[in-house]
Amino acid sequence: MEKKTKLDAWFQKNTVHSTEKTNFKKKFKNPFHSNNEKKLKLVFLGGLDEIGKNMMLLEYGNDIIALDMGLKFPEEDMLGVDYIVPDTSYLERNLNKLKGILITHGHLDHIGAITYLTPKLKNPTYYSLKLTNGLIGKHLKEHKMEKLAKLVNVKPKETFKLGVFKITYFRVNHSIPDSCGIAIETPEGLIVHTGDFKFDFTPSDGVMADVDYMKQLGDKKVLLLMSDSTNSIKEGHTMSEKVVGDELDKIIRSAPDRLIISCFSSVIGRMQQIIESAKDTKKKIFISGRSLVNNVKIATKLGYLKYPQGMIVELRSNSKAAQSKNALILTTGSQGESLSGLTRMAMGEHRQIKLTKKDTIVYSSSPIIGNERAINAVINVLIRKVANVITNKHMDIHTSGHGNIEDLKMMINFIKPKFFVPVHGEYYHRFYHKKLALEEGIPNENIFLLENGKVLEVSKGKAEIAKKPVPTNYIMVDNQAPKLCGVAMDIVSERQAMSLNGMILINVVMDAKRPVLKALSICSNGFIYMRQTQTVLRDLETESKKLINMHLKNRKRVNKPELEGFLKSALDRVVTRNLQRRPLVVPNIMFVN
Image (cartoon, rainbow, N blue to C red):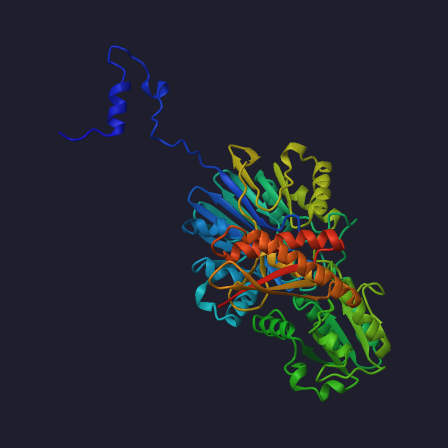
């Protein structure tokens, strides 16, 4: 006789007799059946409470798609850290569900983490427009990862399917060509993500946004809109790129001698405007800076930059011709980066360019938050060396790629969503974006101000924040190696301690056979005035010996990690109490026979 299963036993016990005409299915539940209702989950891994590190997931049942994979530049106190990338541990645990990664455009805050995270995601497929994929492909090739991922070109307003999701890209205006928003049909309803956008009816590349398609989306009863919040506190509409192009044209035509223009390497449309003005004035363009050279090559190859053959050359191999008064030099360095072309020119360290009083320098950019001090330091040096330095404070030679208040209102009114999630910005950016949404008629209970790690669950026309968040630790990178090199937060804290208060090193020599202190010495670097050093160190040496002997009392052997931890903790309190500062305390224990 076959052995009865738990389920058979349960049914025998609970089955209703035929004389009782009861609806069994309604009265009883199968205890071995999981009533796990599918919900649409919006999982935010980055891009909230910050500028940059944009990445989120849409999950439904066994299907996940990711949107963007960007990096963030470190805060000023994150010493030795180059980049911060999203924590993808949740996605790594669910890699079997990943159907693809959708990229909205080619800025580093949306693609910069790809080379660090691709090896962790087991040959992912990236979907984006042609220029964006060109930039992604260049980064992957530089890091020798081109075989670790697949790149698929998509076209605006063409629909394709990934798992249960139907996806349509649509064009938006931004400061780099091929920028898109994404409409995603899900089992719960239509989701729209704007990407980074503004409304520019005279864009530099001449390619208009798909405004009619946005209006069509609004007629389809959009369930939820996620919208860029970067400029939610700036009045009016964002200035058009045509205004910038006209102002640059005036400068290019009137410059009496050599002209040096510094800009972001991604403003391909603006470069085309500069090319047209240079062509009319018979100027030759020399490009300096690795990222600028790479982007010009990619944009030229893909047809996004057009110019006569020989008009644009690399500065590095044409330095003699770049001394001409008719030369126009396009260079990196608009953010005061220490190794950039413009900074090296300012410091007299550039191999090809020596500045003269006749030069005119143009900053066709605006400062990224946190870079103001570095930029001003370079400008101060430049003003001493050249005839004229022009910034966007003097003329309209730069405009944002993000929509101001009126642009954001237009997007809300075009899409007409039921639910609204402000994204891409610090809390105050998103808070004021919420106020705009309230003004445009979206109910307060339908607007969600989320944080990184939060999960928004949508089911049957309702939305609520899940109780359990996903991990979003800071994943810090302190080098530019091909593989991700994580920096633990405690290491950054130690660097901060050393930078503020110096370091105390305690060298402890122990007997290798028994718990006896043989010798102890203390040295310091950078935490007190030299004339006080010897007195303080003698006191610390005495205190350290007392602490060590106290710790070793009644012990038969020395546990090195335990003693180091005890000594570090105890001396940290002693130093803080006596000196009112906290240098980094580093115990170093050695054993001798």
